[in-house]
Image 1 (cartoon, rainbow, N blue to C red):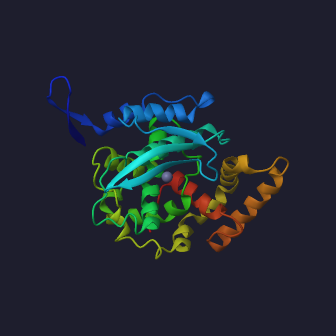
Image 2 (cartoon, rainbow, N blue to C red):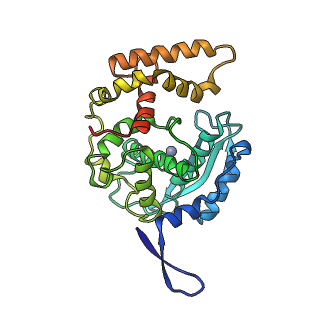
Image 3 (cartoon, helix red, strand yellow):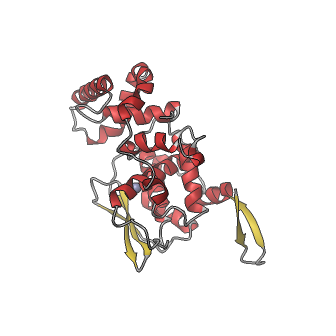
Length: 290
Ligand SMILES: [Zn+2]
């Protein structure tokens, strides 16, 4: 896949591959040892010609980051990108959050089609926008050399439904891991800018509520039990920053209870460990068809 760009010096048309665009955008890998979300986000925005968007730090809990947007005369505008001040999470999660927010920010200055239900059906729009954004963040994490197999995606509760359903779509049928889906979504937003602003092409034809999650998850049950300790460790690692000192063992027991009863009943029970572990498994083993 390539697109045509006019070089400023000569005015000649040049073919630039998607890989070139992404490599240029990502630049060199950030150092997890002294990672600074605001600084890294500003670097990425600079390379995406979006330097005009201010990056701010604030007390935004329960969010880790978000794009503040408004629609002005049919044009979507990003007013600012916020990150959580003193975010206590592991650096890999903080890096992923920056990549996630930068994907959203490429909506800046895009036209909202007149027939868009963007504002009317914000909930469904969010499901598809976050599916695209989080998988794209996984793809970018892979590109800059970080292992994503032991990370829990944000919006796992959407991904466990949307990704199997997308496998029935011609464009996504060969996607296996989260990053494969993300590559398609990144290419759409970075190269073919206009096609997915309202996500109607998915939201109007894919029935998320009709998806039978329990039946689907059955395909992963054996592997879930086989990898039980590993999965519980990943869940503990992601959540450890919200666990009060001295309560670690108690929370480990809670996660284990939620995991065991969730996989027994094939739905979330006493906590989100079933959905979380399913999302991790889908990324480790590949997203199976529904
Ligand atoms: Zn998001």
